[in-house]
Amino acid sequence: MTKKRGIVGVIYPKNYDSFDVFQYYMILNNELRKQLEENDIDLIVSILENRSTKKNNIIRLVNQQKLDGLLIADTDVDADTLKFLKRSKIPFVFFHELIDSDLNDVDGFYVDHIKGGYMACKHLLDLGCKNIITINNTGTQFDLRTEGYKKALEEKGIKFNENMVYNGKQNFAVTSELVKNNLEKFKKSDGIFAQNDLMAFAVIEALKLSGMRIPEDVRVVGYDDIEISRYINPKLTTVQQPINEMSISACKRLLELIQNREVVPKKNNKNVFTPKLIIRDSCGASGAL
Image (cartoon, rainbow, N blue to C red; front, side, top):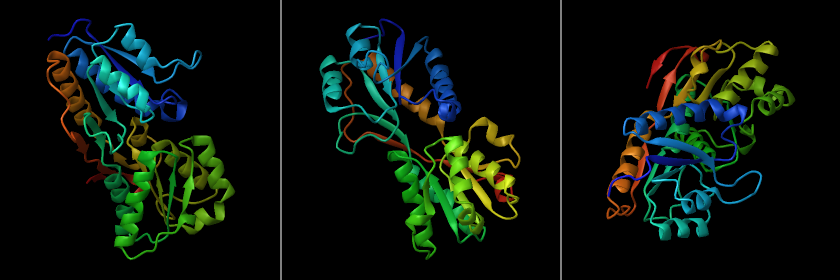
């Protein structure tokens, strides 16, 4: 069966267009659009729940028969919506966000965030850091990055300390205030792993204003590798998510499901992509691992 409408929808988390995360989702969206346009397909962007009416956008879009398929980049899809999707027979894949381990009959494409957190912390440890703070946020992917951070510490024989974990709420202003309110603790650290780039920028700015030098006094690692990471001073060492590779694979699978409705999601088809550490000046060197 071939496509009828030439339109695919992507469902992002409700905060995808906020200032602090928009740059990352803009990169993600551009990659998806590029892959789909090569197949003469347009992309509709939405979130799970309409902010005004509170109606379920997945159900609305499917019932209006606007779409050939869905890329779902939000973990908050409830059981009733998932049952609806399966009944509707519309092709869909979970993309970017880790799906529930109990969902064994859906396709998923996501990053190994445990590996990403591990790589970030291990790099700081390899540079001689021993007193490493991490700044996270609420959510599965951040829990996994913290798990990777913890794994790297314990592998080095350093006991995990919950007091070294702060919640920056994935927000520049909140993280900046967090550093200022805990300045003495941050000044005693020799390495900081901020679990997204905007929080890393906030850390760097706040510490520089306090008189600290990066990387001479403290080394900083971010996560995501948004474009501005290579232009700030100092240029940010960060964990790069393999957005291009992941987008190609997810779109290819969705198109396969669209073009042949007899194809069914594979059991335990969870495609895991490995991030890359991009080393820049905020850790004192440059290159990629």
